[in-house]
Image (cartoon, rainbow, N blue to C red; front, side, top):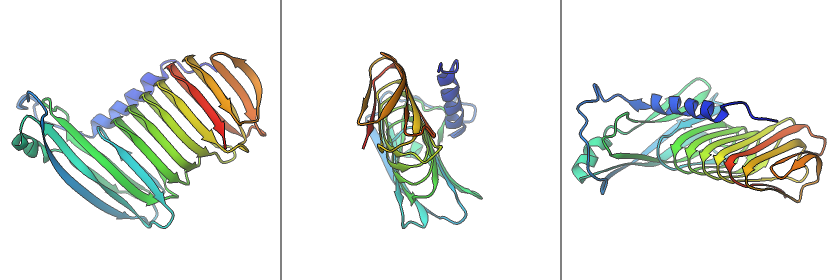
Length: 271
């Protein structure tokens, strides 16, 4: 079960292409002033509400900042709130450049899509957007981010998270779940449907997965420098080494792949 060559390069080149497509142009790029510090800030809240009609997917593309998404069984719309921040060498400069930091909300045919839009050239300034999203539990979720914590809670559908630097926490997820991180920890509690897939990978970082004890799946886990631990799972072991584990839970109808590519520990637990 050797991983495909260059899989992390492919994942994060893909992530970078998405992130930088969200960056606005600074014209010729030569007129952007450079600041000496980021000791001052300008802040602005935002709020958007998009009614859910025929939508099946929610997509959020962040750059820098925290992303918190919460499913609500009674919600009939997607509510996106948060704070935009620019850090610079003066309040005046931060306020000027805060106008270049925008939230693009698109109401598409089957998708509600949210993107951070910021200058491609920062001049040493920090552009940060922290999101809090409440949405119907039944929507699929695709989240990408460059730097920051990503948290998803109470989603009754498939979720995908790609995060360059920062942790990912997935709780009360019922569906297939994918999380790919470069540097950071993955913590997840997932109820996997029959024939569903859990795929969680980090380059550097721990993976802690909690699943129901009656989960049906073939589970594989791989580390390079680290340990693999299973707790309270009736796992029929097919292959086991200090750095690799493969076994069957129940009738093995689903798939669970866990990997810490360089340094990190993996724990899979049953509840």
